[in-house]
Length: 334
Image (cartoon, rainbow, N blue to C red; front, side, top):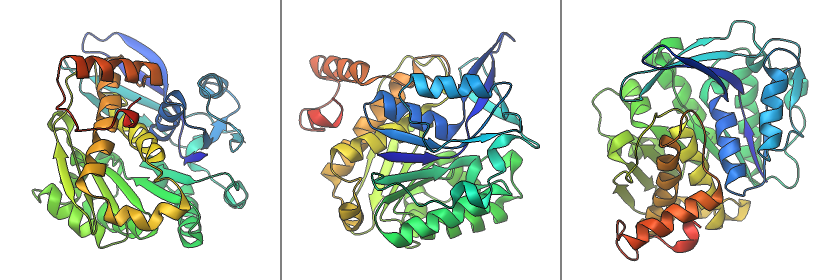
């Protein structure tokens, strides 16, 4: 079981022609749905409102196969995110979150340890940034990391418009890196924290702070990965007819965790292996994650693909020789 902890909220999507649509969202919730659709057992540890959008969000998660065993019912309203799309489908976000359910974590909500069947904990995004709950989630990650039984994966997923500033974000992220085994970030995250510094240089800095594996999405430029004692690799983005980019990074994260699970890397016994992954393994991980992200970009909103769609696209790419033979194992994406 993979446990994802963080926010689940309602997205109001505003297109360039001012048409609007509401959809379930929240980066951690999107990752959980992506994992469930890819066939991974996953639970979401979240605070979901008992009213307004809350029941619909709960139903969305359950209908997609996400376990709600760790959900806390909250009386506060659900958070609302407004995603505004430009003519190319690129999304920018604003949030309505004062007094909403996602950030009000109590000690009792996180007091229980991870269940015995949990092999990995995924955390990040606003849940790890916004008080009062962020400190409690950070403390939980420290406990899980110290226990050494589950792999801890972290995605800062920064929102500069909602932060206390670059220096504060950099201090927080670097502190939180001390308690994780894998970090997945975006080029935008790195540009905000370390302006004009090369991705590879930031990755090497982060690898000295705690994680054994760093993965960075580069938007249309593909993705980069590096392990502390192993190799590093950059891959171009896979072809996609982009509708919008909402949820693409979350889908990539889901695809990455799915690929790691299929490689046997989401187990406590594999923690020490993460720092020594070679370029062949890193290539397989990035290929699988990139394919899931590409398929998501071809759909409106945060709508990650199911396993069957991923297998079908992979077969199609092989038929047209879009991927060179031997670049990725079939079982990494099917």
